Length: 206
Ligand code: ZN
Image 1: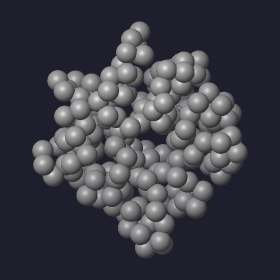
Image 2 (image 1 turned 60 degrees about the horizontal axis):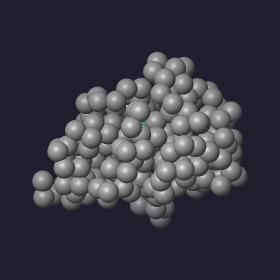
Image 3 (image 1 turned 90 degrees about the vertical axis):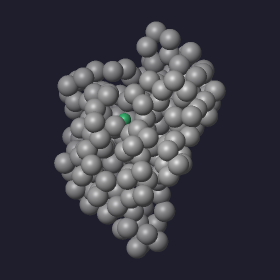
Image 4 (image 1 turned 90 degrees about the horizontal axis):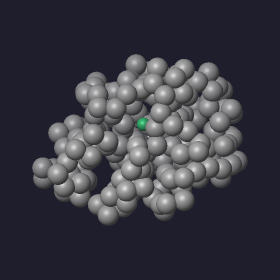
């Protein structure tokens, strides 16, 4: 954390396209990470797309401020205490793109009423709250269900998977229809980050 700028430059050098920024408030999830002041500093040092994932109890209260602090895309949870439609409105009117996230135990159908206003749906592939967890295979079916629903209704949007994504788990997620892959531990522990990212982009050849 004390070398955040250096680590961000490493992402840029290795061809990573987005920086996924996990915000935890100690209420929606037990853990606490970081918030607005850190995001503002990150925005100053990079042009990477900032993909902010709010794991917070009251996203309606904070969504606009995260957009103003430099978020390009803001995901928040359909399970949060805020009104989902109202949060989407806040994000879009503040100039960012909106995404809704679902925990592993939440039916993906809960996001269907909001799809026409979203750029992305985030399907959590682990329980939110901690890094370094193992991928939950059953979550892949939700990605497939959503992608089929989008195709059937002539809609196109990103499906992001977050949690336990590595060169093994990526294949199922991508073949089910995911096209935005969040990876932390796998990329940062790799000897060569660019090669590791390549294996996520071309899951067939690893
Ligand atoms: Zn996340």
